[in-house]
Length: 444
Image (tube, helix red, strand yellow):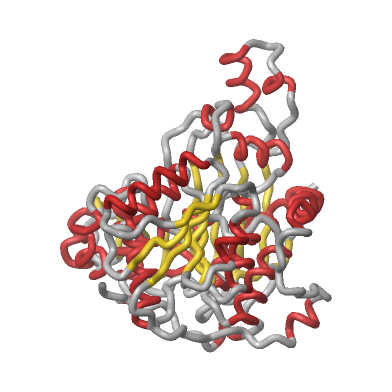
């Protein structure tokens, strides 16, 4: 099922998109390629071509227009009215009117062919992330994508190998890594407050039933994934921040995974309530189990639980639990226990810790981020990407993170389909995780 889904979308664009002729000839061939470790030359101005300007894409464009040293040169979307709206925004912000591209699903290729763009940024539906990013890198541009970066294992390797071959950044824009609580916990981890890390719990628990069932442009693509795939379909929001705390790809790496899903009830039940018993969305089949739980073990012996639940009535949560030999942090609501500091044997509210352990990035940028999407996280992630490109610094998240965090979906599908058997993670860094430096506490 998963392979068929991948092939269907790949063939759909095969004649139009050149992906550089990379031949996937097995792990042995991949092992011969040295992992990229580089910083790109600094850019005085980051010239951006944006692909996909629906709700999330429009939010990123708004952020970029408020960050110094950014020019929006081109905008692409299959809906011409959305392109025109962004063109008007750019002009209102005092920049030249960007060129528009809306001739169909592959018109991003014309955008990528331009010689006056440094970064191609995409917020399209999931199956288009890899085609846009690889087309951009093959044409000499850096690439940034909304989450997840890829749907299948082969697509993850495509991103890694194309980035290595072209020496271009490929960054998955995981905004939750820039949440206030997540940044504070990373700061505390680096200061040793939790001791040696042992365990983490993450998730994407978000009631999206009505969104999936709504017959509206840009929404039903979620329902299509629910109909054809069964696994942990959206792992990166909760997983990314904990992976950074655990130094995944920078001293440790994911080793193997087991995954299982519940039966499917949520979507057909709500569809029956909303549309009546004979509606196609009631009688249609949904492969996705309502709740998926995936358990990951790292090479160094840490464990992570990653859950996915978008089809039951429940409050939003990413869980956000980090546990070590000296204490534990638990999100939703934020609470903490530190041995020898927290009185008694109960959690205490985390709020008092912000004053002492507020991450300097959050402290220095939050005023500029006020009003931006997701409580300011979206602005900070865009700001950090632009800052890295303008200073020639390493990006906070790189192509190996994009592949490792995204591939959880494909591996979970494989595990679920085979009675929750363990599935090994590929080593996208080919051993370089042993010597790569952990992510530091970065200031603005």
